[in-house]
Image 1: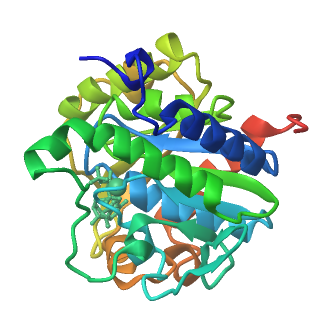
Image 2: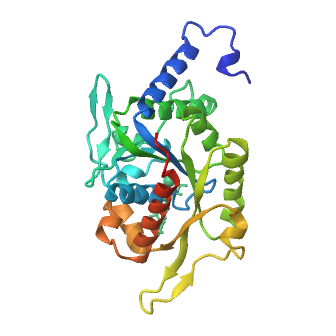
Image 3: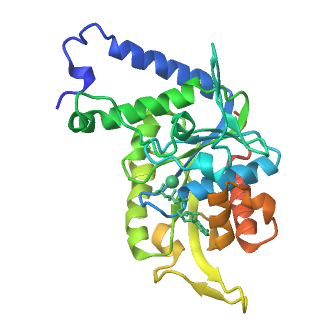
Length: 296
Ligand SMILES: Nc1ncnc2c1ncn2[C@@H]1O[C@H](COP(=O)(O)OP(=O)(O)OP(=O)(O)O)[C@@H](O)[C@H]1O
Ligand SMILES: [Mg+2]
């Protein structure tokens, strides 16, 4: 299949010009962002969005100005998790103002643009069968617009919550060429580790993007009655053995965290002293330490 770059004529659409103009806008917007961090995992459902929401809150609580891009265009969850689903976006000549959480973290998400609760994202095409061909291109375009057209202002950190799939990072790397680093999320199951290792290879060896480290989520469960730590999954290989990357932390499963996500309340603010919060704050500190000395 030919890409738009191979077409002899663009039928007057100036598609290459449009993409170039948008890319320039992305670069201009990112000039006021100190550090961009992608939260990724080839695997679905391991807690990427929950960690993004909580790490953004942790970095905000530490006095940073933080923005979040919900890069999951088809399955956006962050507006709900961060309690800003009812926000009304304000548009101006220079872009759209992001939603802001109770603590001041900024967020842009496709969810904020959909009028109805149960409305899916449908890419316009002649038929939905044709839409399949365009979906990936449209997703990248939507993401490019999110970054370029949002009035982020000066940010210390811009976190990008990626959807599952090993192929997501190359798309992002093309949009954000000087991505500061990647946080890789896994759970202690061999199935997860198998897929997540592929994402690490993609980031490190193929795209040459710095890996900040690996976070193990839902690492264990703390019994509410006796306080014992119980494993939730069964991976035998240690994280160090499986990844040979910096381990940023192990976050226990905490039903209150899942509830906070569902209720749109800020878990770290509600439960600052519980083990999962302490582990999340530890991860945020390691992210900060990773960029220490980086004077952009
Ligand atoms: N440490 C945790 N303790 C309790 N619940 C958790 C924890 N981490 C994640 N969850 C819950 O697990 C579910 C999946 O998490 P989440 O949506 O963050 O995963 P994801 O990797 O972003 O999924 P997707 O691949 O679909 O984007 C959510 O209901 C979330 O609240
Ligand atoms: Mg998610």
